[in-house]
Length: 164
Image 1 (spheres, rainbow, N blue to C red):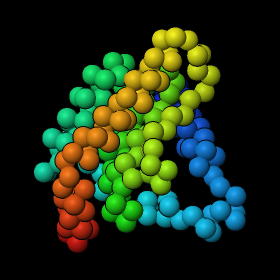
Image 2 (image 1 turned 120 degrees about the horizontal axis):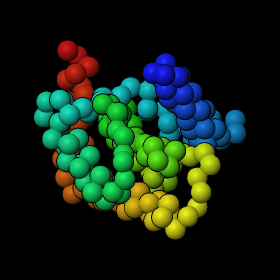
Image 3 (image 1 turned 90 degrees about the vertical axis):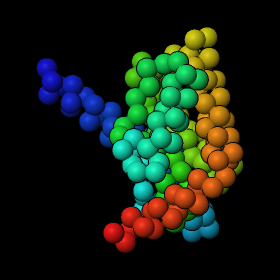
């Protein structure tokens, strides 16, 4: 039974990555013009155990759970800083809705709230949950903006980690 669950989760992960690639795929002529994702090759994961930033991760996770009020799953490395792009992302999953989301701080569009899902029934409850995800993104981005020196601290810490 455990192996079937692992296989199912792995298939979901593969499907998620494929959908994510399709959602962000651009025609060739646009690819050459827009290199906005080029800086996302190197990442600095922020875990609960990361010195200096673990409390940031814990606080953001607690706030997210309070705002959305669903059973949210966040992997150990759900919060990542990308030093080359000076960007921060938060990835999560709401299993009950078969939904994955990503918050992106420095999204080129200025609005980095993304969701991926298969077969989501658009009920009033689910629509409210989608609204809560949007609210959680706005709160997340505002808290990062208010903590003005966080991005600079992350940049310095990622440089230090790179050379250690």
